[in-house]
Length: 91
Image (cartoon, rainbow, N blue to C red; front, side):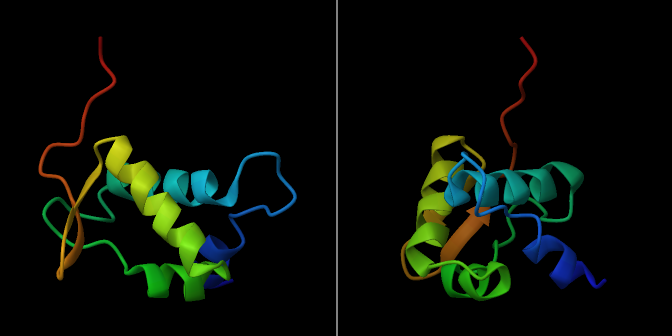
């Protein structure tokens, strides 16, 4: 199974958790692992929708969730980027 196929199957439409939360968790894990580097763009909403087989609106809501978590910042006309210093959960 390729990486694309594996990532696409990581969303469970039958789960009680909304798809946008599942997608946000997948992207957050990629940020935490370094697969998505700081100050670099995340895939576009259209790309995410196509890759994961979801509606573009679901991808947009996942991006909003990531912004609320402080993991990405969106620049109008340029896209969404991983923040320089993701927030830590250490208390």
